[in-house]
Length: 197
Image (cartoon, rainbow, N blue to C red; front, side):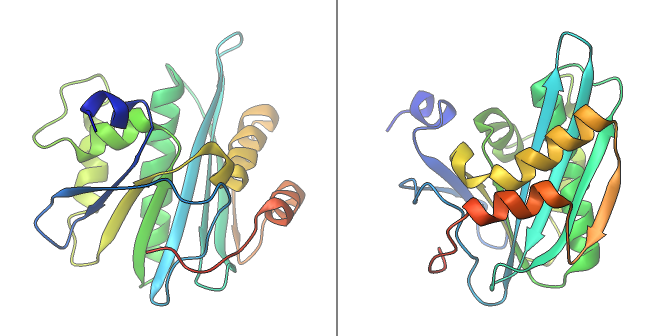
């Protein structure tokens, strides 16, 4: 499989920061969100940008091994240049909250291949997102195991609705153990199946 295939999202990319910092490939899993294994939590995040009016938002949700919500959050983004920046800012914000609100190992899931590639790239990022990417990499370097996975958009429904809520309603909020109505509608679409590895 070529690097181009990975960037186009044809395969999930996983990094285990506790090991040798190698990247391993795995086949795409089911098209619905799956629970993390015991001892893990799963962070999904997404960005939303409407280029016509410059509105942008970030959505984040952390769920435990039972599929229960640890937190959900949305943040209005100001001065956001494009969708990739919105994704990166959602990742940074979500990871900071996850590290504060849970002591378990973390799986981060994103449907943005460009962000996954940028974060997993060795060396310093030289793009306009260098500060955000550097902060994400720094947060991932602690003693806790943090994996980063590229998933299909259908596995990222809840964070997508939170990002749209932040953008459309100019809203910033964190819910502990809960979420707004759009989260519960999106959760109903998720099939909580056996843990993924």
